[in-house]
Amino acid sequence: MRPCQAGADPRFFVAFRWLIWLPVAIVSFTGVVSAEEPAPGGPAKRDLASAQPKAAQHSDPMCELQTRSSEGKVPVYGHWGVDASKYSSWTDHSNRLVPVYTFGLTLSDWRERGSVYADADRLKVLDRSADESSVNPTAMYYDQVDVYQLQQAAIDAGYSNIILILFDGMDWQTSRAAAIYKTGRIAYESGRGTGLAFQDDRRTQTDFGLLGTSAAAEDATTDVDAQRVISVSEKMHFGYDVRLGGRTPWDEHNGSGYFIGADLSRPHTVTDSAASATTLCSGIKTYNGAINVALDGSQVVPIARQLQRDQDFMVGVVTSVPVSHATSAAAYANNVSRKDYQDLSRDLIGLASASHRNDPLPGVDVLLGGGWGEHEDEDEKQGMNFAQGNPYLHEDDLHAADLQNGGNYRVVQRTPGKSGRKLLRQAAQAAADNQERLLGFFGTKGGHLPYATADGGYDPTTDVNGAEQYTDADVTENPTLADMTEAALLVLEQSIDGFWLMIEAGDVDWANHANNLDNSIGAVLSGEAAFVKVMDWVDENNAWDHTAVIVTADHGHYLVLDRPEAIAAAGRGERE
Image (tube, rainbow, N blue to C red; front, side, top):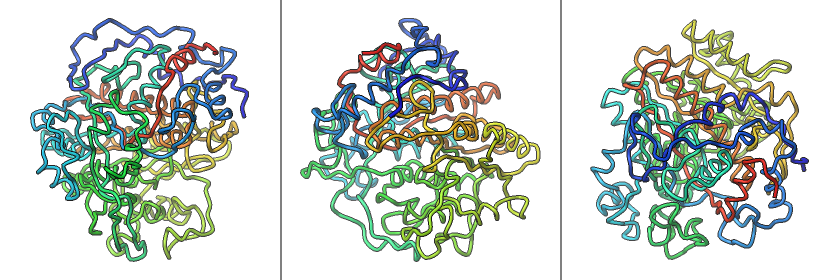
């Protein structure tokens, strides 16, 4: 266990200093806010002491709350799961509605058309297993398939830059916890929220809504070598029952087993990241574990590849977790199993794979993420062609992709003694100058970037999985998600025809799986920094007339905030 003394990396705070005075607004969860509309109530001013790097303070109260919860196994700030008496009774996903924020476009078409959950016929088209329990004539929530359709509509309307920012595992409760900590106050009980950049930014028209995330099936039996779906589980099916889940996240029924698939009267599938990312990127409902593969085993083409093929768009994928994990893979690849990491990475960088043996995909133009330094001797889940070595992006494939070896990418990777930020920036500039593709491979133990905790330091405390520890090299030799976002945009802005970019804050999900709110808040704030980079880039390039930015999550978890005031106090630097 770490001693919970703050030691923030000062680079984390540079991106947020301006946010302290950002005007904010609390809006209806169905309302549109224009760039010119004044925020009611004036600016939300965070206590200056809590806005300073915690290194200048003497303790880390959020770390202390997390440590007390984890070691004492009792709720201190809240609990995870259905049992309110236990700090942790659930470490997996939930069927909660998740937030979606848009910038440069609104959700007015969604409202005019009405929710798919309000129309039994449309629900059946979305998924044949949908039944009347999911029909809600007054539904004001939508579905992740609508995000796919929103991207298509933006392209049809002439947008040439589509940026999808996914906070993996960030439900409304998770973002609220981060906002409470960041501002040091409980500023909202419902709606869009305030305190985080993607809640408060009003430099362009913006909107907010809620999404259902349920998958078509809990799992499937597959053959990764033959890339075949053998059978699909019928134990659970797609749906969302408002009577059991609630109309909104702030009106949900805490303690219900429904959200975790434990209510057998309504066995609605709790999604995984593969199925949900497939819905977001390809517009279909499928089984958990599928990467752009339908229930019948057929491959579907995600929107990024459609745009690359039909309109010569450049494609970028950025993630804080391994490059071939489910969410980032679903941006571009096909596979019957999310666990076939090496083949997924081959799709991403245009090499022959189990899914595309004879006609490899073109590959993305920018791929930046984690997985560096990992090694596995065997992995039966990856099939007969698994190669001993890095399980996420094999060394031979990295070598083949390198321009120096006749490949298509300028490759940059974690290098001992070198600043990851500087190496990446230099490589991105060279790639941009020479019209090259860019492949960046980084990470620490476990394949992800180092976890930034709530105070901006890189010193996680204990959780249900223990506690990770990082060396100074782990921090300095890796870029941040914001650094990778900036590098990706530097390369992609060279495109004449436009680009599609996914940015994944994947460590939110990893933190929530571990029931570690200190890490979770830090991950949300790391993703927020990447969001700010995107918004600043659009401003600097005067690109709002043809750029759509969509911020959402692929699924929720099951954090229940029992004592938000404790999180607010921690955000102010106050110990209990």
